[in-house]
Length: 306
Image (cartoon, rainbow, N blue to C red; front, side):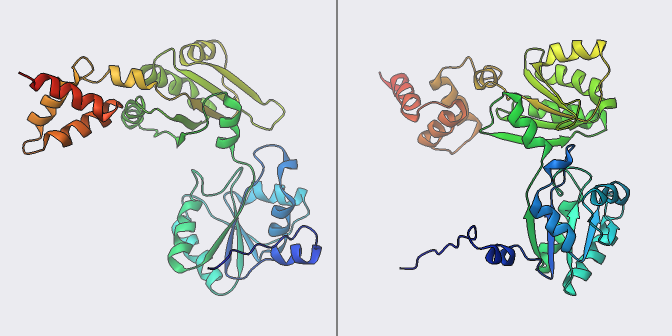
């Protein structure tokens, strides 16, 4: 029987240094601060200081960040509008044996970011990808929201097309998990209006802005009150919006079969699925309604008794 061996590097600086050495033919995803520069980890500084080159979303912004830590490595741009060509160029350099750190303007690269395409390309080419964890606005805001964190979905930025955005929100109206959105200040009021139409005024929401910066603020309120607040105040800073999931009872009450008995529901299911066995229909109905299978089966048997 094989055993899993682990190594503790904490007591041996040389081993720690060996563990964190920069490897050739490797892409490093390096999280950068979302506001407070002190959040850049020592490991991130080491990687950025020692890779062969750095790919950045905006080389001007990244140059300022790197200068603060006295990091001087070659910079290449990698963003939405050049990701196809530049991604191939970066992958080619990695295949030649170089190392690269990918950074975005703030937070974790490849999250709601064109870096996901580069990661996919490296995976297809067999190029190693290593994550250097750190700041992520979505997770930080979720933790601050006061809303359930056990299960959540990340939506990022909604579509700029009004019909697509509203269709997506209509779909999410029945989502039971906590939902995370990113939004720019000049779009916030319209997005909150759309939230009001999709989620209703009473749905809980947390609005986090300027995370880790001087004017950081978290507002825990309802969608209706958020709409009212921003009719009187101008949005400022980048926002992370955390919306409570739909209550399951609310979801079920909106279904057309909400008023049916278990037996009626099974009968309807059988009529819509010719050839299906009664027991399979019972299982399907129990799953839809979130109730024990035996309860549904018992109800069906009672209707069949003479």
